[in-house]
Length: 268
Length: 282
Image 1 (cartoon, each protein chain N blue to C red):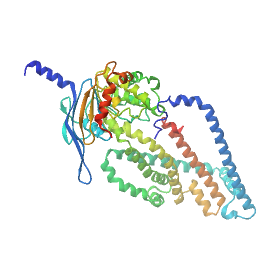
Image 2 (image 1 turned 90 degrees about the vertical axis):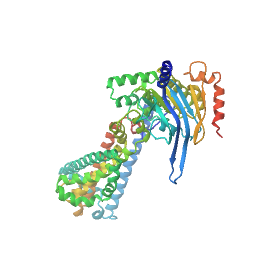
Image 3 (image 1 turned 135 degrees about the horizontal axis):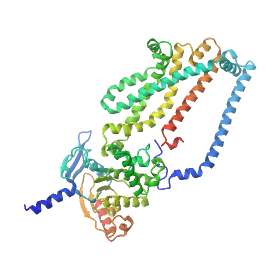
Image 4 (image 1 turned 120 degrees about the vertical axis):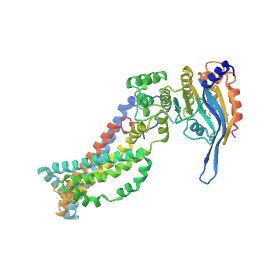
């Protein structure tokens, strides 16, 4: 192999953060049978990329997330992070779920500082970093409020700031916005997109909201019913500011992507 | 749990709360005064009827006492100063047992979180200990700790410790698995998960438990005094009962109730102060 090719190959390797090959998962059920949740999934997540995984509800998206971060062992196939099999929990990964999981006894800023405190970062520095993030998300005034006094959208923004604070390389989001009202959702999608794209992070978003997936992502992976496989993969190209969710919904081709994915999802 | 979402998508309710506060709290205070007035009236009417029935010979004052003899009994304890001594003694026995029982119970209950194996191992023993009626332990407490202050504290502690242990263990194991996974994803060690998540999250349950255990501690202290004592509210009740001084028994009961209310009031204050994020307690 010529040297130039080898270099290009190595660059490519370094730029693939997660590589999933023929991943499958089956659980043993009490009556002795096995229940197959995931048949075979392959995809990759590159550096600076936003990839969404959509599928019908109950198709095993959360199982997939647990496989990705090593909380469950796969029955088949492999998950590679930076080209290596996982050894323990992946590092520099931020998670966000539908539940904001804010700690009620901590104020907004103290919640954002949680990950930094765990890492043992000095108090003054963690406060500064957390406050800067809250400011960026328009919550500077609410830094010292307890979660019980914040609205659902604000709480989810605090959760986003908490996820971002330890400076993750990869974000794994499992339907993080599905409990929010439409308007709040668009705004927080915009904020998420800016925080991810602005700093060259990668995002893997698991969702059942097709419009959200098309609006925010570079690629959308469509999964089938259980036991799930990859039906198709769409590369989304839309003109304009990709973090402007309202603009994206009116962009040329948006409706076509959405209709096509809906048809593929085959929901009766 | 704290109210998870007071206003979804709306303005923060705090702003709104401060705006409306004067009018609402005024009305609330007025209705509270009305309720209090009715409660006092109810007590006065019942006491009046009781006194009337005794005065007309319908009810035996010797067997059932009367408001007049209760009041006389109360005045005697105030005049000879025993009310303060007895209340102080029983109160300090209760508080000592309450603190000791909760510290020991909470420490064991929370630390059981560390090992599923150990907690499963000791569970039946704890259940067995919890099912023993506390009175049945009184003779042992006296043999081990004597007839003085220590045995009453031991009784109060015993009444508290198992309940406190169960509550704090339930609090510790009741932490949402998603929360624990979140802490793991932030790279937290088991000790960090314990200190930053499990302990503070159990506090809500533990403080709810304090209201219950302060009452249990008082029961334990009084049982201890019933068994063998030279002073204390339990001692006075027992003594007056043996002498058929029903009015005096009631008078001591009134003091005991006042002590119980004062103690649980103090615990509620403490809870509000220690849980500033619980806006539902305000």
